[in-house]
Length: 294
Image (cartoon, rainbow, N blue to C red; front, side, top):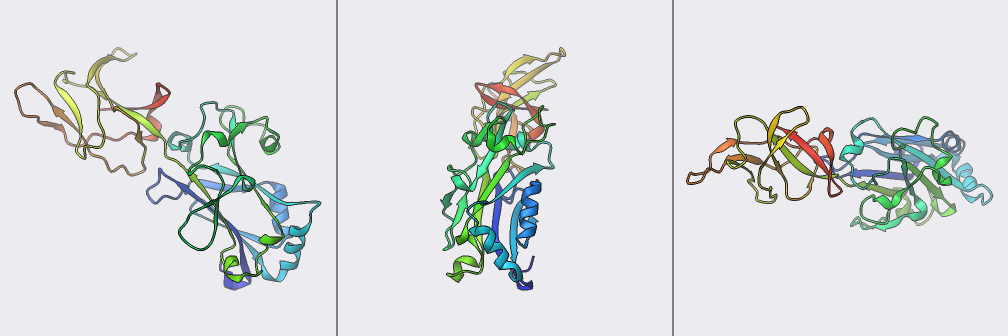
């Protein structure tokens, strides 16, 4: 929305995610509660959405109405949104969530901390740590989230809740002018999930004759071993020694090489496939495992 068309920036929320190549989170949709949508309409505000973020603008011609709402101590100016994902695998590649599926992510401006962005304008992070963590997930019975949950949200983790509160000092068009040019700025950062990568190698491989190697020498893999699958198939399995962060566009290059004694290592598979968000298969030591079949 153009600010030259009679609208001033009121506030914005940028959403970042470590899984996506550009650092943004395009799969999220901001859904205001009916009360929030009505309040914004009555205050003369309009909403623009892009790349998972949210920006709200105030109609200059109706600024007196917005300022009146912001000064009303009897009915504080609070906005509540749900963060809906149109990607069914969002939970699979997002870190920070607890194992209990009935806990709800609640982010509020009341808990916001100043985030160092390297410029003069202050950006407020809606979580105390650099990225969203398990401490921000509350039981669904918590009164702050129970009121906005839909009855059907029983079988999976409910969508996150974001609550923003504003006061008289947040009205656009006030002095000092430079601080108001972008409106009040918030940020949410999600971490990409890290998993143990477990390769299942089918075919004429022997556990003593192969190894997985990272050409960049940043990731180590354990010794291969035989494993029988529930369907009776036999495979050679190789696990990463530690968790590897899932990425939309992975940059690693893992090779399968031979390691026959007395012979030079030969490249058997030049580039092994990467783990995908949909390949989770249980956990080991509390760390989720990505299963990769080759």
